[in-house]
Length: 236
Ligand code: ADP
Ligand code: MG
Picture 1 (tube, rainbow, N blue to C red):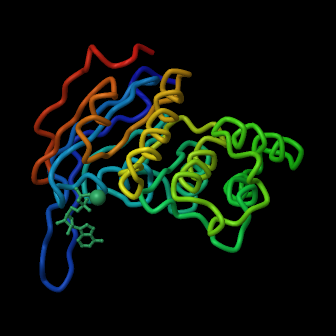
Picture 2 (cartoon, rainbow, N blue to C red):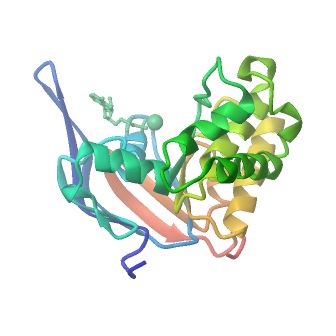
């Protein structure tokens, strides 16, 4: 690990061009995220939060600017290399859970690990078990997503995100589809991950969830307009 941070974005711009319409989704974003940080990103709908998370998570590429992820110069990677690095370095948690409906809970958590040449089958099974236990859903390992509540499905998605021990966990409105009780459970899990040393970047509409992060970033119209550390958040 160099000391440039896990994530180092420099002068990042993202422009979407469709039907002769140019949308400047990100404008000159500069952001360094250090190991162990829990960063929340807030801002009005359409201000570029999901686009930023997609760029950080290698789901999309910036139009211009430099990005270094865990020491990799992302600009020099081809699509295949980005996919390999994404699978190893990033764990995603989405608002809509994004579980595969015809795979069991355990299979959903196992799937990303099956693409990893550095993990044996035995290791994989043990990583799945550990992750399911960590989110306390091991008793549902052979159930299908449709047999679970929303809160349980999101816990499975958290298990899938953490099973491969990624350097960075990205969450896009992770509690957006949950009632307040399940949202609290998922937020408690995310807090736990942070306290055990995970680096987390979470988009949220909810000021209470945002306040639990160690650092709060506010976006407006494609730009970072506020970036402040939160001394009241749980210490790493
Ligand atoms: P947020 O997550 O903050 O609501 P997004 O990052 O999803 O915002 O979107 C930022 C802007 O980029 C919006 O104007 C949105 O319409 C536009 N945008 C996002 N994705 C695409 C896309 N694939 N093609 C065209 N425009 C897009
Ligand atoms: Mg969004």
